[in-house]
Image 1: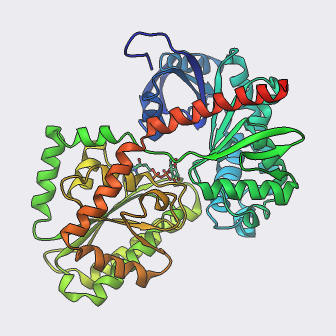
Image 2: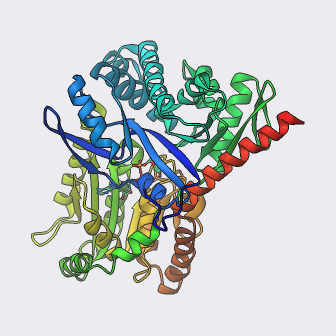
Amino acid sequence: YDREDGKPFSQRLLVVANRLPVSAIRKGEESWSLEISAGGLVSALLGVKDFEARWIGWAGVNVPDEIGQNALTKALAEKRCIPVFLDEEIVHQYYNGYCNNILWPLFHYLGLPQEDRLATTRGFQSQFQAYKKANEMFAAVVNKHYEDGDVVWCHDYHLMFLPQCLKNYNSKMKVGWFLHTPFPSSEIHRTLPSRSELLHAVLAADLVGFHTYDYARHFVSACTRILGLEGTPEGVENQGKLTRVAAFPIGIDSERFIRALDLPDVKKHIKDLQERFKGRKVMLGVDRLDMIKGIPQKILAFEKFLEENDSWREKVVLLQIAVPTRTDVPEYQKLTSQVHEIVGRINGRFGTLNTVPIHHLDRSLDFHALCALYAVTDVALVTSLRDGMNLVSYEFVACQDKKKGVLILSEFAGAAQSLGAGAILVNPWNITDVADAIKKALNMPSAEREKRHKHNFHHVTTHTAQEWAETFVSELNDTIVEAQLRTKQ
Ligand code: ADQ
């Protein structure tokens, strides 16, 4: 995170997220090996030139002993990372429980857990207490490292309580909070037993950001309808304090993808894939294996397309790459079996001795292999049932400047608002609609593909992750200056 031009940073940025962008593996009592995981947030912040960024978060491992904690803290310091140590019980109740069993499905319109899902945990109240406790633990670490003038940027649904905890330490702290998932309609949010406490805690921030204008509007409606506060065009007013609420659509580091296409290793992957699938159109899905991504619905739509278009059967292949996540949760295990079952049935039904219509991989791909796959694809299928933004659609577009393939995109992904004009938008619940979109995409004349791609490519290369991060932080600084001016008047 050092400035390349050697100039001093103008401000320190403390980025607080549930997980540090580093995987830590213990090698001995006092020795750790660290591997940086270059997610979207990391590359976004690498591009922010003016800020010296430090990360605060959980390292993803249980470290019960002080010797191990001290050694890990020291190793992480070299990567400008500061750990929050959470014990197994807290992780179970806060992370597996409240975050992933309650908030994640609710924010994606999948409702609150039914009794059988709650029975495996200890109910809302104890999970909520653990959630608050974990947020307080994050706040204590932030407070310890905070220096006057720092900007604190809290991320995601894991840390909705954090803004309030931080302001309790120091009301002058500059605090922003950004949600990476959708914020649901207030009618959904109001079903949550801890609905009001969470909203109040978020409102303690100076700036609250979402991917889309709709999510921001839902949040303001929840505050007006559930808390009875006043919504204004700028945000929410509570006893004379304004919390600014706005949309900051995320982007990707598009240059990184475009540059990668010229690397010899990526070119080799591209050549191999072209050989492998010669004479067939390639359709691609890349998702974390999660219910929100609509993978079974996507595969069923592909089956319907094959059923209705027998001339395409041996001329098209669907590559579905699904990274397993949350593998210890029964719903996720069930989803994996369900997907395997559907893929097996369709391959049995439409496969020949030479070929099968679906290649399904349960694993993550490295960056070069992923770029090559994006580049050889004719049609990308993003059929999320709900998705905050969906970066896969952006990555696909960035790698398609030669081929100008077609993006089929769910209208329930945040990306539909930015890439909608270039994509074919679908309702992922409507299998017929998606099957028709597949046919349209495969038969689309090149002039139309070019026109659609041009629109999306322009968007992806001009609305980057770096710009997103810079805009959020500078808006946070401006919001605080404006608030100070208002108090002086
Ligand atoms: P995610 O739900 O993880 O993110 P997404 O935005 O699509 O969803 O990002 C996934 C990332 O993982 C992409 O960078 C993609 O390349 C990578 N990935 C997925 N499958 C992979 C595979 N099989 N192999 C290798 N890499 C793979 C959350 C929200 C989104 C929001 C982002 C950012 O759910 O809606 O867009 O945060 O705010």
